[in-house]
Image (tube, rainbow, N blue to C red; front, side):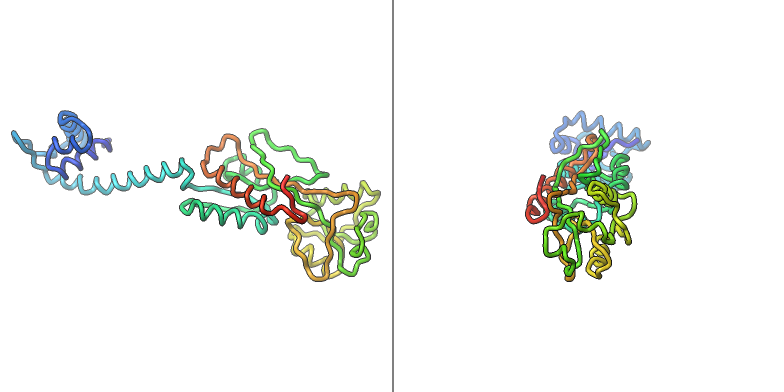
Length: 305
């Protein structure tokens, strides 16, 4: 196998035409350069220099190897630079998982900051619910993920993960703007006879709604289900039901009114998680960018923990 150190020495000897001058440039002794060239010749099986008493002459094989070797060494130097930059967090690949409402309200600004600070970093984004992205973080297919947990749906996190809070968001009741509850701070009991629009059965949002209503003595009559909060709010605007919506998923639509529950404020808590053992140097930058974006989102129905 060819030794890249010996290859670099050969290239320098061909360039300078002298063992002594190559040794001076490389910081070796002339004897060390001579030994490295002899070792290289043994590796390739051919003499590379015609040696005379006070000079050397490169053979055609040496000229060819030096020409191609110079290209290889330049590529290796570039690769070495990339590795150092990656270790320093200036370049590399970061794979992020997120859920839809964070994708539209939090992630774009954080990615813009990362792209500005680390223009050579490769960032990939996957979108899914927390129960789908957590296994990918644990297997290393994702470096980090944004996840959430509802007040009434306790969530335990695998011990392999580092879990950092990003923000808390209020859960808002959305009703058509002409609904009587739109004029007052609503009590959940006032909505027991309404048709509800909820997320998919079995999701944390749907479970939270069911438990919330049960605590008020009734089961919600769920007429429609969608995990797309734009669809949910459009259905509310159309007057076909009411809904419980996290603040990140809320957009003021004509024909709707949103408010937190009176006496029973509930929140959804957003976290960023990553494997504690993950050594990707870009993790720190990504977490910092997400925390900065969430800090600037403080206000209204969204608050930093």
